[in-house]
Amino acid sequence: MSSSATTRPARRARLDDFYDIDAQLQPEERMIRDGVRDFVRAELLPHVGDWWTDGVFPPELPRRMGELGLLGVTLPEAYGGAGASPTAYGLVAREVEYADSGLRSFISVQSSLVMYPIQRWASEALRRAWLPRLAVGEAVGCFGLTEPDAGSDPGAMRTRCRRVGDEWVVSGVKRWITSGSRADVAIVWAREETGAAGGPSDGRILGFLIDTDRAGFQAVDIKTKASMRASVTSELVLDEVVVPEAQRLDVVGLGGALSCLNQARYGIAWGVLGAGYACLEEAAAYVADRPAFGRPLAAKQLVQAQLAEMLAGLTKGSLLAYHLGRLKERGQDTPARVSLAKRDNVRAALGAARAARDLLGGNGITTEYVAIRHMLNLETVATYEGTDAVHTLILGREITGESAF
Image (cartoon, rainbow, N blue to C red; front, top):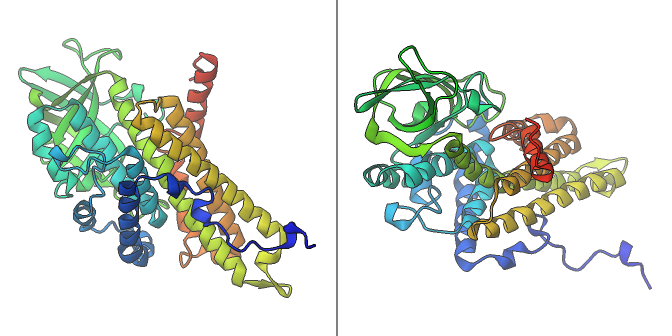
């Protein structure tokens, strides 16, 4: 009787669905996922390597993504969205990031950081004016929170706003802003000045919806990136930009901005799995065909060990993302739960990308293969929307009740 350890199974599970999560999806979710997958394979994968190398985000992509319903997946239909589940949104993020993290980042910002705060805190007039246009990609938005000297500590922001009659005057600099120079509208957070000479550091943090064609608003692209090159990243300079009171969001405090980040982190927890699986699939195919010492690399124990670790990390991440999606649908996606998923799934995806790069040997450093591009992109994803260390401290605070920030 032969040993089961040496007998190849008649049917091997798909690498990207090792625990058959697909069977748990609703028909609508599966339909949305399949449509996005077809789009990614037909229209993104053949070109994204060149876009990344050239540092280009094609200007026609927002409209195309909007036509396919990739923007505002969970937005109510009354505002031009699909009204689909958070799990469906996660699946969209995963499929798009299979192509590139920068392309998924555009969707995350448009949906989670721009449309979400408009839907939640803007007036009905502003919702009607902006959300349908953003949903179809006719308009592009950006989110201005991070500053040159205030990344992991957004409460230290230097951007200021002051009330002048029925208007606000906003001045400051925001950095690392996705879609900044492409945006028609910006969600900008600023600290209110109090007193004639300028306010103390404990002024209220307020959010504004700012038309980017206003006098004093300028966006300058950051061109020196070795990561996220198929994404537009800018610095925003606001020099005495006048904003009507009607365009101030109905939220006070840093919690408003952080709740937007929580939405984006949820999408990241799903999205990075796409990049990770792209690397796993590429590595598995490569070692199957690459000979070494008379046998394919796939027959080597150390190679199989690396592939097993990649599969294990991504499979656990998939289960984590799926269950988080269902928790979110019940309103149980606490910030700490989202932090764990963002932190650990980025770790799994980045580990898979680094391992794939290693398994490809010298070929792993060329952009003819996807591993190095995903690896470099994921270094950024590990940093934005909360670094690994920040999410670790969020979890530590959840466990102990003590803040170590």
